[in-house]
Image (cartoon, rainbow, N blue to C red; front, side, top):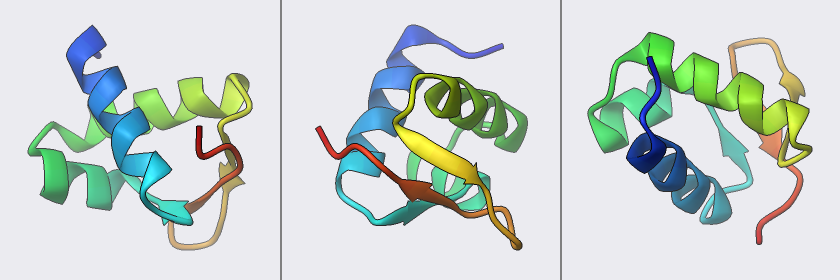
Length: 64
């Protein structure tokens, strides 16, 4: 469901913010919300973002 270009775009967006959410990804990058959620779960496994917080936001742990 996620495309490599979406992954890179989400990583770039995350590098510009302290918190990121599927809704932000959907609005800014115009990709499906489910794809944004999937990408954030992957970035959590990679240690780039923290676990989901109330309201679906995730803290960006690694900006680079």
